[in-house]
Amino acid sequence: MRRRNFLQSTGLLLGGSALLPAFAKDASAPVALNSWDEVRKQFLLNPKYIHMAQMLLASHPKPVRDEIERHRRLFDEDPVLHWEEHFQQIEGQIQRVSATYLHAADPGEVALTDSTSMGLGLLYTGFKLKPGDEILTTTHDHYATEKSLAFAAAKNGASIRNIRLYNEPADASADEIVDAIAKAVNPNTRIVAVTWVHSSTGVKLPIAAIGSAIREINARRNSAHHIYFCVDGVHAFGIENINVQELGCDFLAAGTHKWLFGPRGTGILWGKKEAWDMVIPTIPTFTGLAYPMWAGWVPEAPIPFGDIFTPGGFHPFEHRWSLHKAFEFHLQIGKEKIEQRTHQLSTLLKEGLKSIRHIQLKTPVSPSLSAGINCFEVAGMPHDEVVKRLLRKNIIASSSPYRVQYVRLTPCIINSEAEVKTCLAVLENIRQD
Image (cartoon, rainbow, N blue to C red; front, side, top):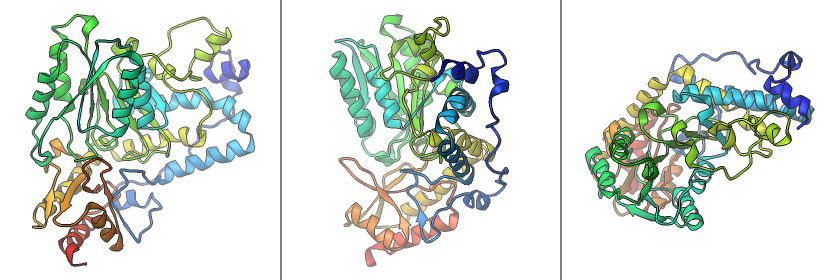
């Protein structure tokens, strides 16, 4: 990274911005997104299949594909200059649109990662904990959360306690969940780590209510015993009309290559300003002023969380630098419309599943306790056999990769009511196929 190029790209060199080549032009003309059919046309999904598993890894819509290809071409033509001249400016642009999407107070609250797992690993292993401190988590969390917390505890000597939030997921209630967490907190609890939407059962936690309960507990504590509320938000991100300032959590990690349809290998880690001092980065950053301060090019100054927690090194930049197009795609459609549509399709699916005698729905029907993941069992049939039989009918489903496994159908805004009804018709007769 040359000093002059860095100062130009950050605007710290007088007149530097005028020396930069134009890069911000759209790769393609704006697309019309006035109907769900028009939204579907932005994807290259194979029309042979009904795609009900994009919660694992999503297809890119046209604006994202076009931007990836544009950056790929520019990197192939002149990789060094394209990176040096645009690195700081583009990543700052992505932080700004991410903050807009999140309703974050400051773009400096948003770090760029490669995945939810990376964000969780950086966050939990970076906490300033000590022997005697406790991490409170649940039995419903993903492998990435469990292992990241285990690594953190091994490094700092803190303890981990796992609690159960509900017995039968379909019957879970908000009061039951909040009460379980509030009662489990003890004087040594320093972190409460949860997952917003459980990919094992489809249960969506009442995050704002949990945050409110933790705030009440913190109000009775001194700052040395403050509880930090951390959320794996990946299966709400891109569905729920998120406003992080109203959630009540201190940190939120999410991959952006699932429900947001962002470039594969991208994610975000949001951190509330008041919580920044509690964590230490693991991987040196190249973002912002950290590198030039180290080099002595600029005076020492505080570095925002979003910059210092964005891992440095070289990444597949054609993907990372196209992430803003995914946020813009969702904002153009409208976050509220996406939330309503996803819940509408999932409710239609769940109500249909409940009416099939040989199916047991495992996910709550209410949108207040579920999002886009819908889990169920077929009586007398292993989950993997159900997934195979659905695939033979050209329906792509998945199973939850947990100790207890269920079949999952996860409709999103690329799906239609007709596709949901086709899934239900196939499941009605699945034991005869």
